[in-house]
Length: 239
Ligand SMILES: [Zn+2]
Image (tube, rainbow, N blue to C red; front, side, top):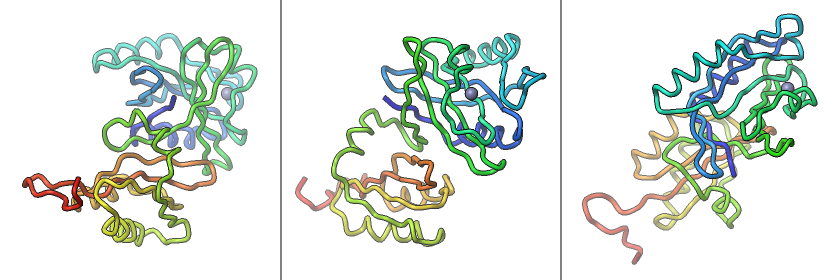
């Protein structure tokens, strides 16, 4: 079970929560649920209608909800949950959050600290309780077995002490030495330029599957070393 955000959905949500700081920001999550996986295609900020208590409450008007629902359906999506921020408070549901939560909907909470630093957590409301789900940023395709893959013994390239411009270089260098189709988990401290790294790796024939980040500010990218090329030549490793 996991939550997958498009890079745009994550950026829009996080930026909205920073802009509304020190008040609570809120919005609607649009996408689809596939079995136990949640795909958030868009996050749509809406005004916080809790005018009297914007510092620690949020309220979404039925009018905004219906408008977003209509737009979502036109694009083949549906409303799968909500996001809101916790200014200077950890991103875990409050008792008020539980009181107003709807069953089987996803609640993403963005803790915003000092208006800049963020922590993002996702919680599914089910059976009168919240259950936390891991959150990933999805770059290419879908990865239904990501959890299994990540729990497997993967070679790890730790670049957490590396400065930003050298990350792409170091990743490419490492991939060259790996057998075809071998997975590699890369860890670093910079929010990747989400267009740059995938492009650089794709042009070298590698597949980059997704990025995830954690609250310590470490980003992880799962990459697969170059496969057979399309000219029909084999990778040469006997597969
Ligand atoms: Zn809350």
